[in-house]
Length: 223
Image 1: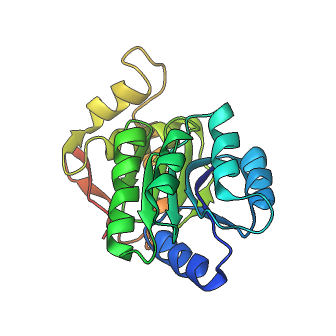
Image 2: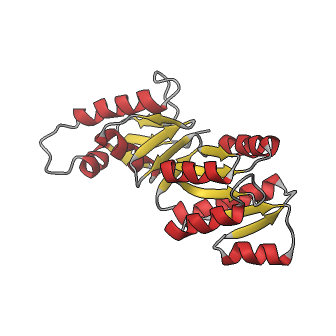
């Protein structure tokens, strides 16, 4: 699923917002018409729609109405139409917010971040360039999907939920494999090695998952 679908026929504005959002590690799709927006939404879905009103073909109000008929995906209407009736219409159709153009990019980013925090905080773990979607059990680094085994994924989630804490090998092993597992703790060492290969920039000098000698491991936030 795409994080954000931008529906905007002004190419320059769409590209600018897209660049800022991708710099914040969101996955972004762009549609320049209402028909394209509905096609992309039906095919890929989106966690948030940033929607212009004045579009070629189907207008933004119609797009908003159709999306709202099938989902409660957050929708931010962004438009140069500033009449009270337009704002009321957008909100009545189910938009979560209505922002007038031109807008301050920092305010837009803050509004988007607020929606993601309120709506999706329980489903995602984000640390720098790393993003874990707990619902789909997928991991991204710099917006690129990282293939992981079930145990590697569970290890990463455990570390992300305990950032900055030193976790003993016994604790990690029991959490991931279970205290009654027939596996040996050497299995943990191997899986840590594999996980580092996928998320560290330099596996010979790991900066994210650090070894605490004689105890276990500690996850340091991505810079």
